View 1 (cartoon, rainbow, N blue to C red):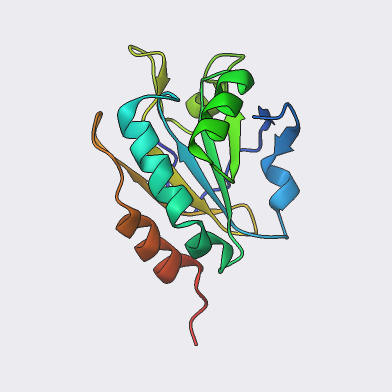
View 2: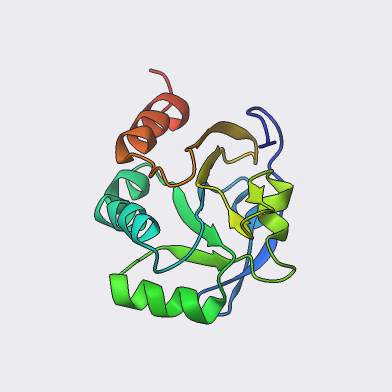
Length: 157
């Protein structure tokens, strides 16, 4: 079962597509983070989804949000995919132990060996403020991201 809103997001330390270590706690007190779990690099639905994020990256950056994708792929596969598709955001390899972070967030599909399509919006304090998960094979809509960023991370005036 996926982690619920208003709970502390579990910290992690994973390698990005360049082999650099990224920790969720590095962003605490600095900026909000949107974690995007996806099944597999180079698959058609995942490519479509991440290309939508790439094409709308200004939506995240204008609000000071760090966009991070996570899959069970290796850092080498993620780097090749990012270079091929022009992804200008962090991709993390939840490669070994296989799917450990996806398991912590409750979105690892044991029978498939990869994470479900799940998004967690984490505020600068490290608390999950919103999440959405789609059914297997169903891509997330960029409008879902827009709505969450506007409703959850934009301060009320």
